[in-house]
Amino acid sequence: MKKWLISIIAIIFMLSIPVLFITWGMTWKWTSFAPGNTDAWIGFWGGYLGAIIGALAAGAIAYFVAHKQINLQAEKDNKREKQFLATQLRIEKYQEAHSLLSETNREFAISAHLPIEYFKGSIDLEELRNRDSQSQSNIIAFRRRLWGIEPFVEGLAESLHMISELHTRMANIIYDNYTYPKGNEENKVIKNPRILEEEHKELMLYTADVCKRINKFLKLELEKLEKGS
Image 1: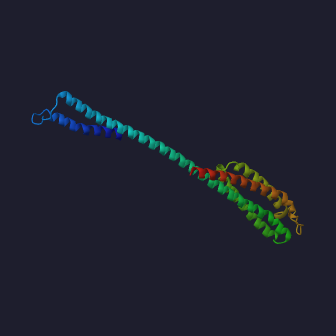
Image 2: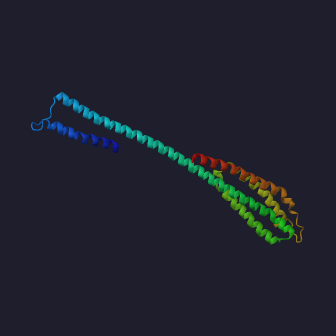
Image 3: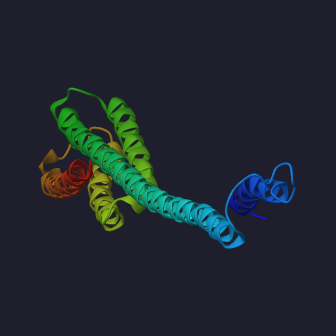
């Protein structure tokens, strides 16, 4: 049995005890000193019990109304809190995606600049290979982290596929012409790094454009957060 029903029954029982004792006492000769006939007392007890029942009914209604309002407010608060947390999560993921793409773009620039240093004689072939290998490893690591947050960022999957395709084209040019050139002849003439310009520019511009789109999403979410606060 519910606690509230038990409480109501207990209150009714406790309030009935005085009535029963008083009524019983009025049947004794030495306590039946109260004036009035039977009809008058019936009217009195009817009013007394009616007042008690009315008070209990009003209290029960007030309790149920208050309880309902509290539940509705709790539901609204829970919904608002969930929306707030979801917005915060999206903001964090947008920020992370923007940061990782910026770092990836920086590595693209490093990778494309290494053949220039090699062409100018600032670094030798061994250093070119080591530094390019490190740069490619960093790019792969950033890409894996980006794939981990792809479900939270609209359109990121398609963008990552395109970035991967553009990067592969540039990386193949570096590999085939600089780090491990075909033929492997000693004293081989080093090709002018300008052969990388088109692929490198396209890759950098595309990645920067993806960053701009994510930044727009981020601003929209921040505006939602400010409106909801």
